[in-house]
Length: 321
Image (cartoon, rainbow, N blue to C red; front, side, top):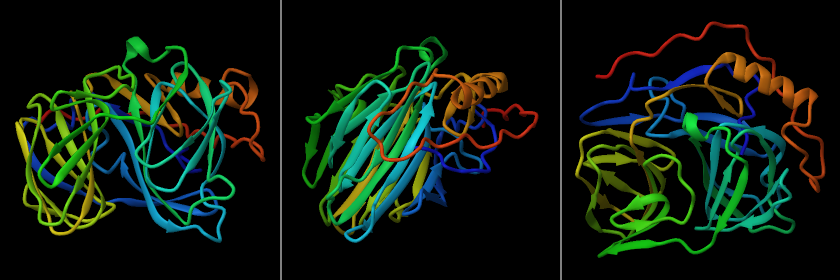
């Protein structure tokens, strides 16, 4: 999925500047962003004061939207570099095309994992015909410097491992949770898991104290470490936790995101992750004027032009607290 913000400004993310070395409960308020003509998303990362959670650098939550009489998701071809995109659905379908020739329909609880590496382009759209509801999350994972120029590739996993306990089922999307490991390729110590809680369920999820964590609410009523987290909001939890108390007031869906704090500082702008503003400037130039990002074939429409890149100095981030 693309960042379609036409006023996008470069930002410095990563490093340990805003990593909280102890457990906290920091509720993040989403920003409403229009994605194309028919889809509005709630953007949780990057957020004011909270740029990343582990290697997770971008989180959008959308729906549930009734698209029975609408075109649904329509994101024309656009570029990525230096990151992985994670497509995750609770309702509906998304048709993925990319410049490698991949053509896959992503369905609920299936992992669509695109590693952009040095350069890739893709499009996303609701199939024709499509289901009535569209509900999901789109996330980016920043690639560490050693792997940011890896050859681009796409993975589609329909059978993911699950961890169960009374009243709760966790599907491991990326990384590892409680001994279960996703088949998706990860380049940093990380975890992403979809949590389904039954009404009245109470559970304690095992965590790694060296990871920082956040929980995104997808649906229903749930308390995370005693904090009510409403759908479309996210609770940042810091580091130093060995377990996470969860309680469901109704059937609820959550996403657990975590990982080792990302040591490197990165520059993120539009759909690119680099290390310097020169990286970003070159990527924009290449998208507009070269074949570096390849061609997406089969999408009915032109690619997205890059927005204007502001001329601005990037400031270093703060210190660990």
